[in-house]
Length: 136
Image (tube, rainbow, N blue to C red):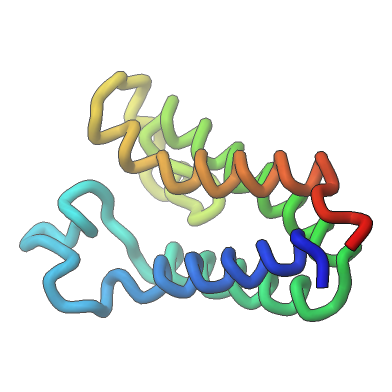
């Protein structure tokens, strides 16, 4: 099993945790914001669940499948995080289509709300494009 396949399993766990955030008592505030920062809806849950399953299957299949997941997932999530930073909403959960743009805002809340997609997407893109662990 290669490093990228193992990384896929890590992404599976992280994405399943993201899927479950709305359903763990105490993690959302009275406004429905997870950790008081961002709102997750059924579209976000579906996106995270589908991504988690994709990561699991890719990790089980092969290094090549894991690398494809890392590159495609990584670029999609990184782009979503960048887009969310500049507009307030992402495209993967269809938020930009249902809410329109909130405009550019340089705030701690905006940065924290988009940090998970920026970090997960950035790491996955880097790992996949570097093809780390290919010789294992």
